[in-house]
Image (cartoon, rainbow over all chains, first blue to last red; front, side, top):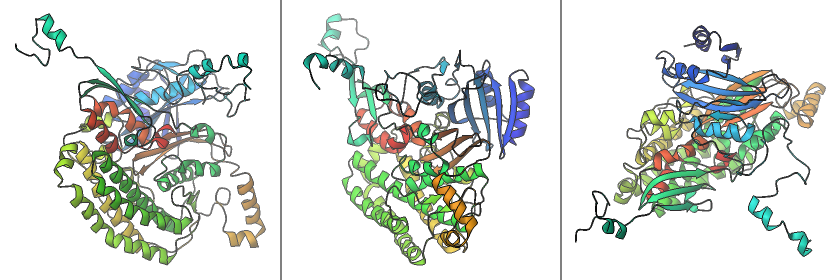
Length: 176
Length: 408
């Protein structure tokens, strides 16, 4: 099926959810509201003519100047029909949370953890939402646009909590 | 007195106390030779059986996606070498194919063929290293040395081609660093003459080996449905009998101009994944031979002066090309079409996808890397749970991961 036709079907099925359909170099991008994301995904997964059984990718994008600051990108592909569509769910800065799609695709598990780690997006109903690439006591969300690539030395990461405690009293001993 | 080993059907308290069992937590890695890098697994064991397996990754996280947002499109290429550092050529190709599609640059046919050749050479080196280490993990020592013999030959060919053995950075946006010369092609062709015989040699070493069969058959089984649901790709998916290959589904390079097949397994166990990779040796070898035979003449760089480097002789003789060269080298491409794009390529480990969000400037607004190793490690608990500790090693080997790519 042509990706544009999938987008049309999606718009017919969820007229209130689909915000915008864009196309670039034969790929179709559908922006949706976040509230019924699991319904939309389940429809794409279960409909026999769409059968989006392969979650290629899931990631976050940060647009600090927009009203809806975060986007979660669902890159869906059908192994059966060889067609692809990309869903973009919009989240606001104040409430960056969305329902997890792990019940539909197990492969979403780590992608969602990574999006949470990097952007602070919360996935409701995720079985094990922890930091994945960064240490568990890291502060901040590194891939947000307001997170600098390089900070001043006083602000940089100084190691795990254990090592911080270890050196907390260095000044008492006059260790330089 | 009757001994109740399993603890089942037991009403007598003293008996169960005497043979009380306790779950043991075992930490594997991150410094462990069989984890193929810095992968850490925490295994909850009931005797020898794994109850729960929790992988921890991120020890090699370098923030490639974040770094890419601060570099122009030309400067990102060397970063891709360091993802899957044993098949860097395939990453280079994947990156360039994606950026070219974003820019709308048409690549000359000769380049497509050369990229296919070096891409398949990378697949052979990757699978050779995989076979060597996987067999070593399971206990077959000899294969290691034989595999490294052939791998060395391909790495030497890479060195002759572009000066580097591992981090090659051979492709350029819109083309290649340099053309191949006929002697190099002859040497490669001679290699492909003898390579199928070498593959048979490896097979005689392990394929009928009883220990090998017992260690791999029926271990780490994943059904086709589960494998798709977990997002597996590449030989790991094809071992479960799903004939999905990006080279066939969304052809790039010269893959639609040569004859080859997608080998698949049936049972989805470690043995089938091994068989798929062994068949891929032969397919890759055949693709290389066909590409050398059909290699067309022509330029190697696309004619898109805003994005691709002009030829050196033009730079030295022509003002306009000199300006383009100067701008590209000092500042990089200044504009990119605004839009978003996802382009996947088949690297030896699976589907490597690049997702670009471009805001029209010379740097990507967001570069997302869909790395196969990351997805494969996430499915490791699914493969391991309920199996024995020794099979964890076989499973890690069979999904073929590199942590540089997993952690990015």
